[in-house]
Length: 305
Image 1: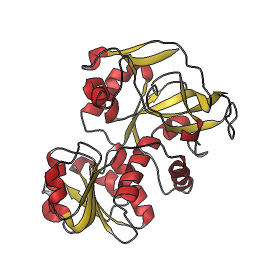
Image 2 (image 1 turned 90 degrees about the vertical axis):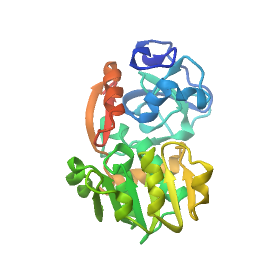
Image 3 (image 1 turned 180 degrees about the vertical axis):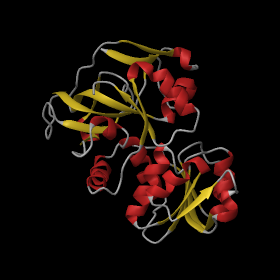
């Protein structure tokens, strides 16, 4: 089968779309025929060397967000049958024709979405859910600030927070103002015209999806006793001494949460926005676009769809 593989760390020149052995599902696993896969910053960060910190061993099959159909079942798997449409996240191998994954980590694809649309949901939505609801304990009526509100994670975070009943302030550039407002933010801040931390203060929760200087500037927006959670980087000791909680979300598979997200999707309360769809053979171009940091919504690779 074809898959996207790296044998060494580096820039896009190390990325190969090549033949590898098709995996066989073990006990408790599904073999999924992948129709589409979402592209996320973690993919090119692994390519660039983050795989070392994550404990991965070369060669690495890239890709972690998929939608596809069940091809075969390992021993002991119940609740699934060949042909079932599923979606979810995998530890590696998402940019391939087939992947094996624990059955307990796959959920049924929302019926209203095709495979391309479904592949844009799991990782971004789970990251936002686990950041805002599990770590920061965001609840109805609280004030939330989201940096990078137009991105793949940020755009889903806005919608999930609105569905939870939070008051949402979104930060993005002027070119994305109309898009971010369409997501349902209560307040929009154009970071190209004003410093968001000077406008958004006393927030119950800040969800930073940008990192770097933006993360550190976010300290000024959190109220005492509030919570700052980031999807990028790792908070240092200083961040934990500011009079509010600080955490870093590390997205994990969670079928229960995927089921709840699917329900919101089916009710029309959450939608993944896709800017670019490319064939998997053009994965290098997808990484270039993602690394540019100006993508609105998601980039999706078409594999079997």
